[in-house]
Image (cartoon, rainbow, N blue to C red; front, top):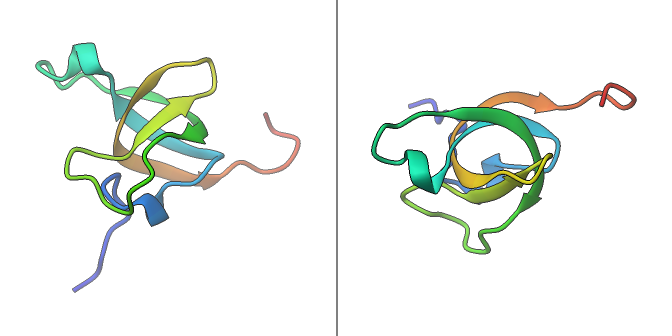
Length: 76
């Protein structure tokens, strides 16, 4: 079975990836926010609700999906 990259595995989330997150205040609605990972806040290798990250710009939430790979250097 193919394992997809998802936001529950810390190994799938890296600084520079574009991800969709769900902020705490958006948990009920499920509204996603897209951004680039600046910092990984969860230390454990797995979290059932998603790895908590801080996006560039300061938004904090749990990763719902990994969208793309790392940024190309100079394209920030």
